[in-house]
Length: 538
Image (tube, rainbow, N blue to C red):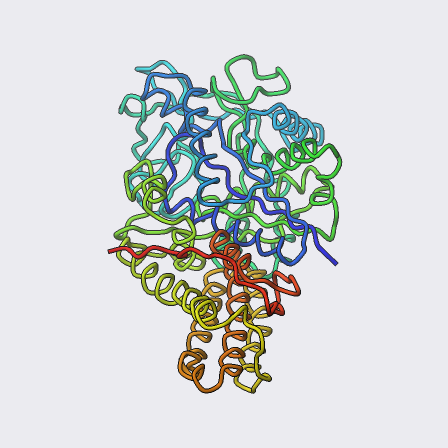
């Protein structure tokens, strides 16, 4: 029976262009995972959207002398272009400024407030005297008190992934003026994580199959003792608080409302389908599974805080897995749009076949540790693995059939070497499917390309271009078997490279049409036209 699979993907700030680190960190892995599950017949709901209330947006707006909405509109449109070009198959990609999102955020806020899991507390907030304004946490930078990283932000250190409050930073500086940040007392609503600590800890102990760096960090975070965390801030740009207890000039803090976007995007999708309750199949069905694809800097919010919110709210499914990736490095540095490390995604999409770019990234996914990527290595993989191994395999088999056979009519009986190759694919579907389900995507791609190598080895051993002179039927069987194997290779590679794989599959006429299994190929029918799959880079 099919399962309901929720694929929730990190919400990018609509504040700047994306780069390879973003795509390889969250969006490509999620798409590979979603495409596989759709292929095997599961009901997938893949959601995300542009985070329009983050501090990076107001920072960019201030720098450019425009309004935050101008920045949002510019980059949200840019993101939509990315997804179309690189083939990210969203069911709903939205924003955090929709009416549905605001309604769902207010519902969760009021639910937790009524249960006593949100209360008012006084705290210190960073203040820039020269600008005469309170500072959002990301407007404050300083030295991390835990690892001494010199560019830690007021909400989190990118180096050690510790969550922070601005007053914890050593030598905190206002990003607005460069002056030393002051701290003034202010009143805000806080999420009472202390009240949810025991329940969260028990739930984390029950989780299996999570990546070690995710589950170990989450458990240690809880073991150190959770602290209540402010969920409102002195801001002009953000979602209004649904109660008036704090007075003017305050909004809901982005970290609290952004994670609720997975739920609001699901509800919005349901409304767009004309069945406003259909989201419940992924959120209230106990048999449904939910996966959160993020970078490791988002682990605190998805492995601790979002589950805490769900535990407090009650009645909604908690994460099945949070397969957070680590960082993609370029020349030893974390890819970063804001710091100018690495080219923008648009630069690559202007030069590369999108499937080739997907392949190059998928081959170095940082699933367990930071991964280095370079253009030289990307080009090598394109030329040697896609052009020479996979693309050339397809072209030479198609050419042999088109040049030497009239629709591949009569062929000889199957021999052991032929059946061994096809049986190997039956096993490969099981192995690769299992790897993808465990979100071991890099290994799944390696296994898929190993199948390509096996077909090349089979052709080199059987040499149909030689035996065709003396035994046409045997040559026909070899090419028929190769065509079966190529069709299966295209099936296995489809989650990683959907466009070129679909082109190959469509060019091979079949009597059966199983997209995750070995198919019978039609004989007496011409092959479809097929262009070169990939171009070689000089």
